[in-house]
Amino acid sequence: MSQDKFEQIHGSKAPIKAWIKGVPLEEAAKQQLLNVANMPFIHKHVAVMPDVHYGMGATIGSVIPTVSAVIPAAVGVDIGCGMCAVQTTLTANDLPESLGPMRSAIEKVVPHGRTSGRGNKRDKGAWNEVPENARKQWRKSLDAGFDLLTQKHNVLKNTNNIKHLGTLGTGNHFIEVCLDEADRVWIMLHSGSRGVGNRIGTYFIELAKQDMRKHNVNIPDIDLAYLSEGTDHFNDYVEAVEWAQNFARINREVMMTAVLKAMRQLPGIRQFKADKMMVNCHHNYVNREVHFGVECLVTRKGAVRAGKDEMGIIPGSMGARSYIVRGKGNPQSFESCSHGAGRIMSRTKAKKMFSLADHELATEGVECRKDKDVIDETPMAYKDIDAVMRAQSDLVDIVHTLKQIVCVKG
Image 1 (cartoon, rainbow, N blue to C red):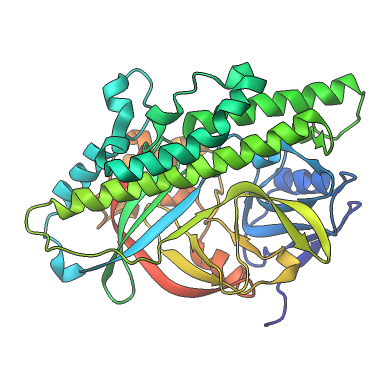
Image 2 (image 1 turned 60 degrees about the horizontal axis):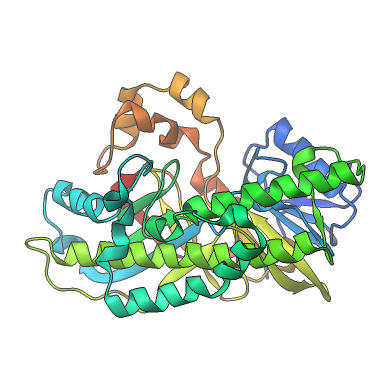
C-alpha cells in the first residue's frame, strides 16, 4: 500500500486523521470534527474524507467509529443515501444526436423534485415500471421489519414509504447518463430512503436529545446527542436504520430498473444489456464492523466503504467527472473513501454568487436543467473533484472515469 496521505488535526481527545491535502477545510467544519473527536466513545480516531464540509452536528465527509453508542444526527435524516451505477453494452455511437428525448423519458418514469401535492398517481412513480415478480420480492423485504417498528413507534406509521419507492427526491439527488473513458454508456443515480428515512432519522434524533436532557449529559453540541447501547431506544434505532438502509438500496434498484426500461423503449436505440455487476453503495449510514480488533459501529456520514477490492462510486457535480473506484482497504480510514466532491459553499451563497449564464457555461454539453432553481447545484458550488481524488489516492484506485451527457435533477 502507498504511504498514507492523511494529516493530523490536533486539539481533541481522540486523534483526527484527515485526507485533506490540497482541498479546503472550513473552520466551522474543523470545530465539528473536534467536537466529535471529544465524545467519550470514539474508537481509535475519527477519519476525515477530502470532501469534508459543515453538516448537522458532525461534518459531511467523516467516518465516526463508536463503541456502545451511536449518534443519530451523524447518520442524518437521509438514511442510506447513496449511489447506484451500471455499465451498459451501448456506446456513444449508439446514442441519438439529440439527447432531449432521452432526458424526458427518464423524467417521465421517475418522479423527481418535491412529490408532495402532486397526487398519489404521481407519487407511485417508478414502482409501477418494474416487473410484478420484482415488486413482490422487494415488497416482502420491506414489509418484513416495518410492521414491528410501527407497533413500537406509532409516529412511524403512514410514511408513504411504498408511494415514495422509486422516486428521486430533490437537492443533490440525480440520475445521469454518462460515457466512460472508452465511450461506453453508463447509467448512474443518487438517492436514499426518501420520506420514511427522514421520519425515522428525525424521530430518533429527538429521542436522543431527550435522553441527554433527562440525564443531564453535557455535550458540545446538542446535535451530537447519542443513544447508549443496551437501551430500548438504541436497539430500536439500529433496527430502524437497517430497515431504512434496505429501503434506500431497493429505491435505487427500482429507479435503475425503470430507467433502463425507458431507454430500451426509445426510438432508434438498439437493444442492449446492463452489466450484471451493478455497483450500489450507501454513503450515509451506520454499520457494525471490526476495526483494529474491536467490533464497533461505523457511521459514514458522506463516506463510502472502500474495503479491499470493494467497488464504490464517487460522483462529481453536474458538469464534472465521476469515478467508479476499487477500495484499497486502508485501515487508517476504516476502509472508507469520500462520497463525492463536497460543497464549498451553502446553497444560499451559490444562488447569490452565480448567474444563470455561469451555470449554463459550466454545464455546456450536458443535457440538463439550466434554470435558476438549480443554480445551488451548479458545479462551482463544489470542490474540485480531481483534487479530492488526488487527496485519497491511498484509499481507492480509479477503475472508470465517467462524464455525464444527460443529467436529471429534482
